[in-house]
Length: 184
Image (tube, rainbow, N blue to C red; front, side, top):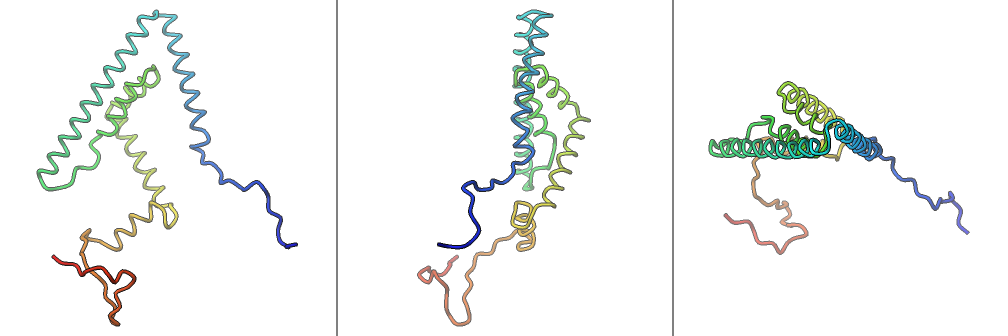
C-alpha cells in the first residue's frame, strides 16, 4: 500500500476567461434583441419594409467592404513600390468591420456599422483598441506572445539574419555532424 495524498478522480480544470464565459450569453442576447426589433419594425411598417431594410444593409455592407479592401490593396501596392512598409492604421480594418456589421442582417448591427463609419468613432475605437492591446502585451507573462516581440528586438535589433554555423574550439560540430558547411 502506498502512502501519499489521495488523488481525486476529478482534475481541476483551469478557470474560463470572462470572454469565454460571457460571449455565448452576449451573442444569444444580441440575437434575441435583433429578432425582437425586426418584429417591432415588421408590425409597424410591414414585412416588405423589413425585407427591404435587410437587403439594403447587405448591399451597403458589401459596398463598404469592397471599397475598404480596394483602398487597403492600393495602399499596400504603393508602399511596396516605394520600397517601404505599409502605413500603420489608415482605418481600413475598422471600415471593413463596419461593412461586416452592415452586412449582417439586423438593425442593431446596422446601427453599429453606421456608427463605426464615422471618423471620430473610428479614431476613438482605434485608440481604445491600441491602448488595450499594448497594456495586455506589457502585462503578458514571460514566454507568452508579448515576450516574443521583446526577445526578437533583443536578439536582432536591426532585423538582419546572418547565415552561419557555430563551431566549437575543440572542433566538435554538435549533434548534426553530417551536415555540409554553408556555401554562398
